[in-house]
Amino acid sequence: MDKNCEKSKKETKFSLFFKKMHKKFDYMMFPDDIKCLFCENDIPNFYEKPYCAECEKIIQVNDGHRCIICDTPIDDEAKVCDNCRKHVPNFKKAFCAFVYEGVVKNSVLSYKNDNKRYLAKGYAICLAKKLKDLKIDFITFIPLTKKKLKERSFNQSQLLATELGKILDVPVVDAFEKVKEEATAQKFLNFAERQKNIVGLYKLKKIDLNKNMNVLIVDDVMTTGATLSFCSGLLKNKVKNVYVSAVARTKLKIKLN
Ligand SMILES: [Zn+2]
Ligand SMILES: [Zn+2]
Image (cartoon, rainbow, N blue to C red; front, top):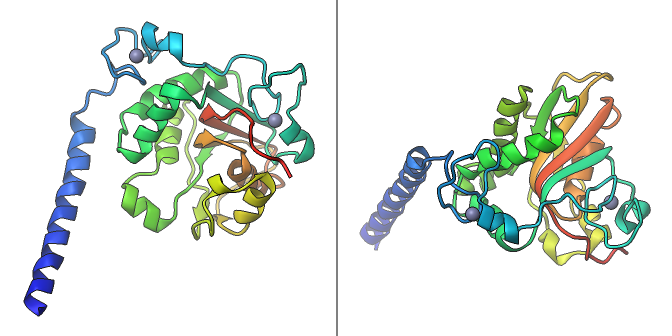
């Protein structure tokens, strides 16, 4: 039994090693600046628009009428969504490139779950267009727990922040730590429950801050904005303005109580 146990242990180590190597290899070898973000066909003008004309017809760029605070699309004439009216976020304003639906959703899920790191550059190009007029002193990102980071092998928000920092020429600072996982996955909870569920999960690291700073926090997807708002709250009274940004924004459908 011991021998078998030893053998399977070795196999696990071995297969883990290969899995890791494969992930690295995949990242190094994949041409990262010619592929459409959504269908992965080659496109000629990646740095101007990192998605093709066909995909442009079926995606929703987040440029319609939307909440002036959290950037969620709004169907009626209101300037501020119900969510922000009832629970004022800790950030000043959100900037999200796409609506989180259809091929955009598939792309973002694949980015983090299938290790498609090369997509980060294209996402960052789209976000940079939205953020180009904003004064930012540093960019930071929503962290993963150490365990999750090991499992996934990269932090999707950190990589986005890094690519965005390169384009905007702004430093990226590792400002937060996630000390434990949510007791219940956020997707099963309403807004108020989500807010409660994340209290104490994130901490601010010891970093240099001052009252004149404008900070941007980056995440891959903004659903209710509970996590981004919580982390913004950790910075809020220590800096001048906290802005947040995500590749994609969900339409507000969630129950608000
Ligand atoms: Zn395409
Ligand atoms: Zn809002």
